[in-house]
Length: 292
Image (cartoon, rainbow, N blue to C red; front, side):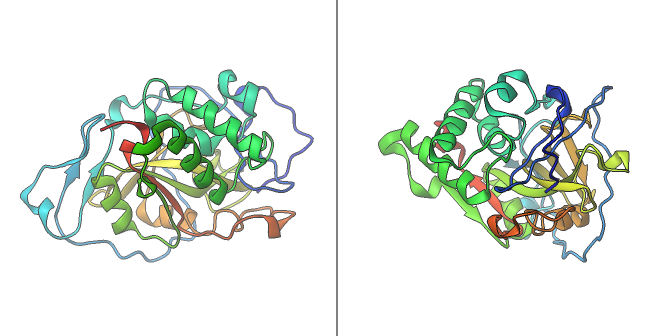
């Protein structure tokens, strides 16, 4: 991740860090009409894409439902958990988040955001508990295993005896068909990917998925996948790109999903303190939020 310990910027100009160690990140801002940016990321590895014609789509706030007969057999072609046209923009740089927790709360924000109207209450619980345990730092963010641990702890405390360990799980070395299957089941899928710094020389990569530097690791929710369009939709809680979500190709997504904590530019100063996860995801049943 990109170390910038001497950088002081206002709330909407600073970004997200997730590595523990001396790894501090910053990001920028812009304004304009929200629209998903076209993002090009290199390299673009060869990705096996399912060839079946099943199509699945979700209505806002509902478990995705199959809309074609083919959805009951073969691989999924499309699954989207939200209404992308009306999906609201949320930024982790909002003063209500940045003032108590710094600019690097992408992980807790990604976990709390799908919980409903009172998601900020859950965000406070997650961040406060992680700070008590020493796994979250306002300047350094949180690592994948710590994000999973605090999510389980807080949601279990909320649900009590209703909590089942299988409601929250992690995947490492995961694949796209299984990710799509989880979305089709209505699960919340949060991934650890690489995004460009606000200082990235290509404006398209500034606070957007990028394998080229300067870049850093970032937690974000996958909103949907459309294989026919070769598009994956990822929630954008940063600020430079005004869109509420990013649209990336399947190949680009697979590239930024690889080793996000260590394959960043510049390299982490304390590389031994960051986790060597790849194609990592945090998968949460909506019932874990108390939702049916």
